Amino acid sequence: MPQPRSYTTDAIVLTRFDLNEADRVLTLITPGAGKLKAIAKGIRRPTSRLGGSLEPFAELRVALARGRTFDVVTQVSVGHPWLRLRDSLESAATAWYLAELADRSLEERHAAEPIYHLLRRAYELLDAGMAPGRVARWYEMRLADELGVRPEIDRCVECDRLLEPDDRFRWIPPLGGVVCQRCPGPPQERAGLSLDALKLLKAYQRLDVEALAGLRIAPLVEAEVEAALREFVAVALERQARSLAFLDEVRADR
Ligand SMILES: [Zn+2]
Image (cartoon, rainbow, N blue to C red; front, side, top):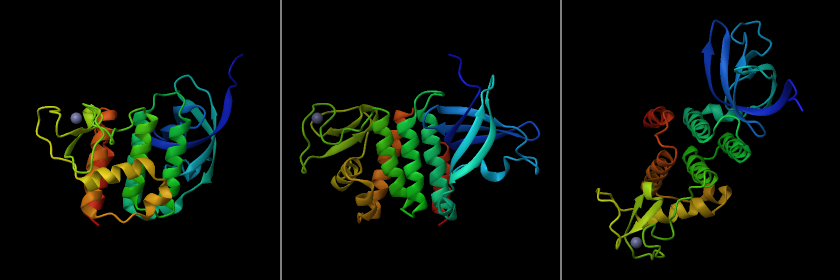
């Protein structure tokens, strides 16, 4: 059966760039059709019917017509605007980072439903005022699960020994997690991972998001886990996210 020429879907804008005089090309994530590129023709004209609603950080309802290169946006309405997410520059910069990770994780037109719902939930949490760093760590850990690269933090990835609290261990993302002191691991120097950071990584793997939001965590431990998870995700996606530079700038300015 031929595919219908037009369809309507929920969508979140991941990236966008301007094309020609008045058009814009968007990368959308949708629950059913996966990640796709769409063109919004004439959207930059003041008279455009598509208007200002085709923006990131919102759940949209988008009508599209199938096109040869890009599908064409014919109508948009806003489902959830998540307006409070934009009130803080740090939370907006975090939202860009999360969108970039989703974008990097997906092939076009492949099933994306779990990652769509993960991103949607993360935006809800940012909008509800949860600390952006906590939302980002929670999201990174869940994304690793979705990509099938859940970090190993209970056993040594080299000898499979269950780690004890008095062990010393190193965090080695290219190997998939922690390495115990008895195993050599790769030759390069690596700082050890503190026991508190290991516990926090376990919390991100095991606790639900409400419990994570309420944890009291020393800033140094939070910073250690941030570095550990960022590195893990960069290895899984084969490069560092570009939006991190902006996020770090915003946070240094606080
Ligand atoms: Zn070992």
